[in-house]
Length: 90
Image 1 (cartoon, rainbow, N blue to C red):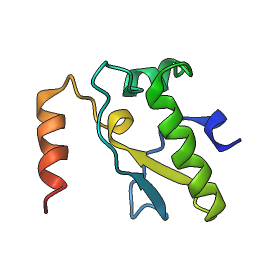
Image 2: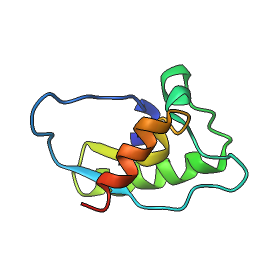
Image 3: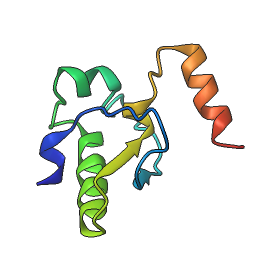
Image 4: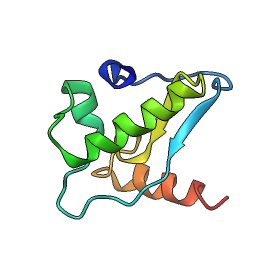
């Protein structure tokens, strides 16, 4: 199961192919956040199902990595969040 090995990977050069989960953030804080990936995701959160779905689809296409904004952007860090949001439009 692709979702069982949720972890961060940082690439110094051009990253290998990866899938991006395009979604809306949960209204009830049910998304999996970056610190939860580090500490172990809470699989009962609704946002975790989105990650499982994305990982499953990526695996079907032989893609090893996924990028999920709610996990990869620290939304409590204003500078990081602003930089990430602005980069989506360039």
